[in-house]
Length: 184
Image 1 (tube, rainbow, N blue to C red):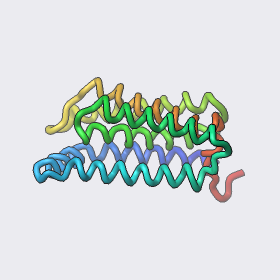
Image 2: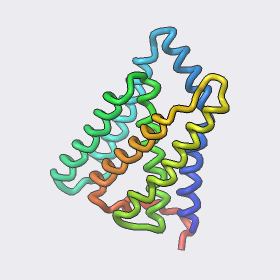
Image 3: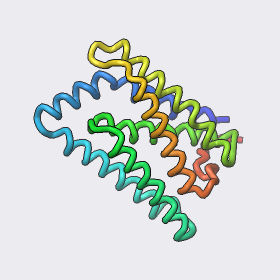
């Protein structure tokens, strides 16, 4: 019971963090762009994300076979290719990182009750809803605007994160199940 609540609270916190920084992220990207630091900042953030992911893949997840590594690298390459090819703006490319991570939080929450392959699909629902809500909230901002393509990009980021997670966990998302003291 506690792990379910904890997992969903983390997902909601992640979604709230994305949505609460809409104008701040935009203003920050304009500031960095005006000073010529936007690309280097985004590259640094992507590099840090890649370093954390590599650490997880190599040291923490303990993949069991060379095939699991190959599958994971192919899935990560697909995610990176989509990130680079589908958006020109570095700030827009960061949607892939945001919604990929948000998807993983949703997957952690879903696997509490739904083990196996259906968890990968079910986790797309709250992530897609968060992406839609994020875009809708931009209509309330004086500096942002509603872009239906962003909703699809956010969902694509989540779907590619699902492919990466399926490759990493060999179709056993239960490995992401959170454990909290006091759970029954």
